[in-house]
Image 1 (cartoon, rainbow, N blue to C red):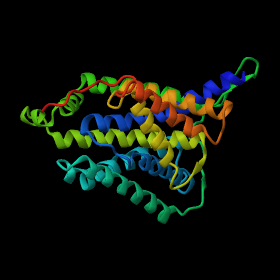
Image 2 (cartoon, rainbow, N blue to C red):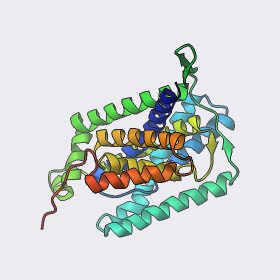
Image 3 (cartoon, rainbow, N blue to C red):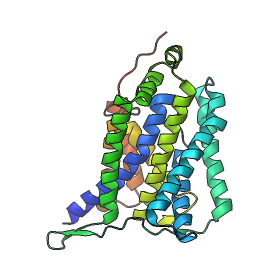
Image 4 (cartoon, rainbow, N blue to C red):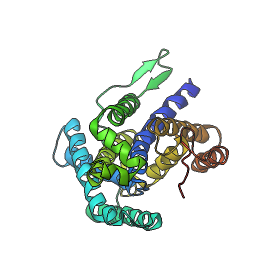
Length: 293
């Protein structure tokens, strides 16, 4: 049963990475930029839920909605103030700006909520499920996280494949100039992408802190980096790839902690990424794009 417990923990953790990675992969796929502040939006979402339930006494569901609304507005504001003016700038300038935004959010959280860890109360009301006569326990947080990941991936696949805004996103991801000539509002499409990605970050933050109930201003930093790794692992720009990459990252991390070393688990995760990229540079489900000259 211990092995199955590790599988459940790995899939649960991997589902959180997958939800975060979906935000990364959408922004990169459409805006062609790496938003390293995405991990800190996760932290802001978790703090919003914490404040709503602890200080205002709101029910858990309402706190999640608040977190999604605040993160959506935050993501769109960041895009408008920090990234939109750099739309035509070199990618290095955008990357450095994203790192700057990340540190700004962490320090703002440090100023507002302090450095002391907060004990996050789970927003999941479901009781643990016991299988094999109590030999295997699946927590309510794991069940909700995995189901949320599957539902979000299906919704995003439908959104990008069959809706008007999804078609606009695909057109912008292919060629911004041509999309603009076809009457698509490129700026509005990119803002919508940031809004969706930030709302997903809020959900991921709440689920992450429900499973691992310690909240700090740096809570989103390492999960954000690992989720970015998962997005690259699965093939950045690919929605199914982000989910598969997240699940594999979660399983590798949990099994690395269990069977090799707790201290080396993060190194193992990144080592696996390096090996995969050496064999398949575009990731598991990424497409090779030829540069036009």
